[in-house]
Image 1 (cartoon, protein in one colour):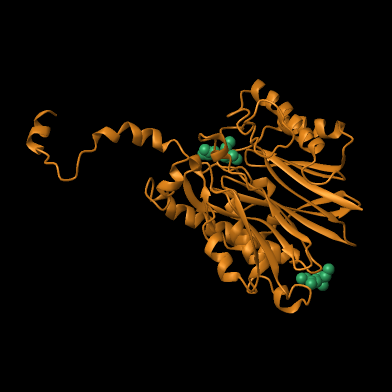
Image 2 (tube, rainbow, N blue to C red):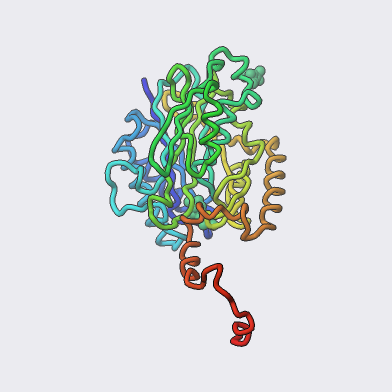
Length: 373
Ligand code: 13P
Ligand code: 13P
Ligand code: MG
Ligand code: MG
Ligand code: MG
Ligand code: MG
């Protein structure tokens, strides 16, 4: 009685600019998914300008049928986006036609197949204005930090720790670390979230516990098309982090890459669905957490976790950090490091200025230069 939980998301056009998704686009996604008989259940939502299709079914991960359904849904949504001339209509649909799996075609995918437990609480985290590496810090806290997750200390089923599958997005390689024994090895890599991303976390019994979307859209496209605003699924309770342990890392807004033009560092602000439309400098980056209880594959929910006023202080802190960073304007570390700027439009500008550079030892006659001005 295995169930698959698949979340597929894309930015197929912003309303207005990069801030949100138009209601007619949401309606279209709802309509297309409702017509399909492939799904057990689904829930359509959005965070910022990214539309999220949360689906349950019996077809396993990487199912061509399910991926095609999501692709067709996003294509139908793009038609509406084009009609309304929404911003960047079709932005994340990089291919012209579906070719078996949406991976590598633009949309983000997180999916897992598992035996539904007696009670199956899951959280779908969805972020806008950032990248998949944004999950490294919270996933580490949830599954490896006893100061965040007391279950690692007091729950005999968690006491042995977890496996972390880390992907190198540049070299296209992966590695499995076992915690707590290899904590320090794990941190060598996941502390660099622009390159190394936690793809999945497994229990020591080999059960899937968490999985994220990891595609680096800007690299796939070979030109700047925005950050690949990520999603992450976390299963909770009974040998896995309690719901509150999975949410706790977001009470301390960590810095992530993304924000304006995908070129800045900023705090990841936990918000409710009501507050999920980034506007200040197109941000700051934000994350929504929707909880569901699965019941024979049905999505019972959602529970909008960050609507809880206990995250007010995190939002306040995020705003303070945002104020501080914004004062730096185009200076690092608010603006991303040059390596990261490689995937933005900056190289086009620096290329234009390349010929202006002369040898550092060559003399400059400043009087002569001044006279020509
Ligand atoms: P309740 O007593 O409200 O069910 O809480 C139990 C618990 O373990 C909370 O973390
Ligand atoms: P999105 O990736 O959310 O479209 O944001 C792109 C951007 O450039 C925001 O300023
Ligand atoms: Mg956008
Ligand atoms: Mg977005
Ligand atoms: Mg995007
Ligand atoms: Mg209870």
